Image (cartoon, rainbow over all chains, first blue to last red):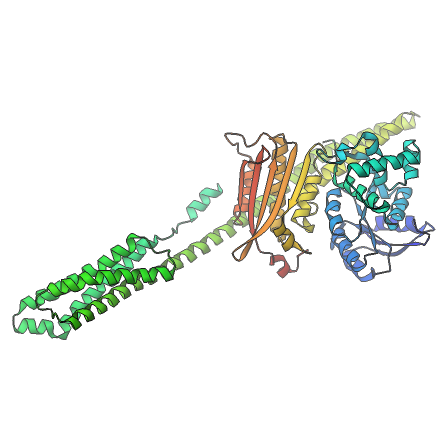
Amino acid sequence: MTDQVVRVGIVEDEALMRGMLEQTLSAEPNLTVVHSVPGVTEARLVFTPGSVDVALLDVHLPDGNGVALGVQLQRQDPQLAVMLLSSEDVMGLFTSVQADAPRPWSYLSKRSSFARDVLVRAVAATASGQVVVDPYLVQRSEPRGGSAVADLTPAQFGVLRLVAEGLSNQAAGERLGINTRSVESHLKSIYQRLGIDGDGSNRRVAAVLAFIEQTGRTWRT
Amino acid sequence: MTRTRTAARATLRPLDPTRIGVLLSSINVVILSLMALAQWAAWGGWHTAARLAAWASAGEALGVAGVNLAYGLLIVGATFSLRPMRWPARALYPFIAAVALVASLPRVGALHAIYSTPSGWVFLVAEWVSGFAAGFLAVGAGVLTAQFVIRARDEEIRRLHAQQRAARAVEDLQTEELRVRRMVSDQLHGTLQYQLVTVTAGLDGLAARLAAGDPTTSAELRDLTERLEEIREQEVRSLSHAVFPSGVDLGTARAVEQLLHRLPPQIATSLDVGPGYRRLAGDGNPLPLAERLVVVYAVEEGVTNALKHGRATTVHVAIDARQAGDTWVLDVDVDDDGTGVPDPQPAHHGLVRHAGRIESRGGTLDLGPGPLGGARLHLTLPFDPDKDRALGQAG
């Protein structure tokens, strides 16, 4: 996590939601909201390269789509981190976007963004280059049949879930009641089973992307 | 219903090229031989025959006309026996010339046999050459005219079909709008309201127990919020999806990927996006929005059928685009490992509806056995990648 103040730009069409995000994030000492606009047109005008660290983008906007906007903004400013906000589960969309985006995105459901600590943690983690997936959807996720993630042991899958939520190894260990070294050893096996190599943070991101791609959620009908 | 309507309207049939060719060439040949006879009469033949009462020369003139007619019909018969109308011009016309060249030899022979015909070599060669030229021109011109006539008819049929398709598309659009309106209304009035009513009743009960100081209420409250979340995610989303599928504004492949991702985790899914589609897509979105909707809804129907009727556990979708002449065609395969296509094939109303919409746009939709052991839904749809760009809607 960076020591500098993280500059956040918000694109959200519902005024109440926008106000809530502004208020919550501005109250944090290490976060500042530099832009807060209701649509794609305004965002294109004010999100100049270098002016924002994290863009919080609603998926459904009256004059366009937050996903397309994010790809465009990030191409102009490859340093920009993007976090999608959506009321419905758009994990599928989010998966294919990752392939086109210059740097991986995070995704939070609107429901979770009402929880102050979840929102703040997700924005901060996204700013520092991590991929964070909505904790509510992560907890509902099950490995997809026939995928590599389905071959993980339940303990490994449990660790991967928390990493996908954006938790550090230490925080994940505390949540699971195991020590940090066990989390690290689980992660090693996870990387191996998912065929991920490379260095530390890239591996972590790759594991989260595999989690997003190879899981699904069940809803009662 | 759609098919009968089409059959009733399609009154124009394509012409048989051979019949039209034979007809027009024969007319030319008959005119040519009658003209030769008329020429004989006009150039003094008739006058001389009448004055000298030399009726034998009139008989000879009729004989010459008969030989010319037989010669012409011989070329027509020999030419069209091989049904050469669809041959390329560089093969067709040399062929007619060759037939005329051969057939004009017996013609010279027959003319020579007629009593008062001159018999010098120069005359014979001149007659052979002019007969060949006349025969070739008569049949060649007939063939050329026939091709113009056939092309005009083909063009007319094509225009008529395009008109019929457009009319059918408008009708389908209206039917579809009504169907979606009814579905949205049914779901709003039925499922959604009922679910909300049960949650509200639950909340009322909890409020009463909270007031009475019951400590077990917090778990139930959490369960109710969970139910509200499910209602939002399932019911509200499915309504919104029926009106406009999630991700469709980002492209066909992305919308299909989102669709597959939403399937229960027990189902193994995969999506192949072919090089043709990738190349064409580049940064933008090659399929116009209307075609994108047609494809996404048809794929969804295919996947739903595979899971519901075929009890499939694996679904694989492949999308690619290819150029066909001056248009583009999207190819989509939906394969599953279910129980396959039942025999006899039941009328899957949903699929029939999608087939109608795809066919009215010049595409195809087929259901058959697939490589994964279950069914394969194959759809093709022609599209114009520049349509939305021209309208400023490409995304």
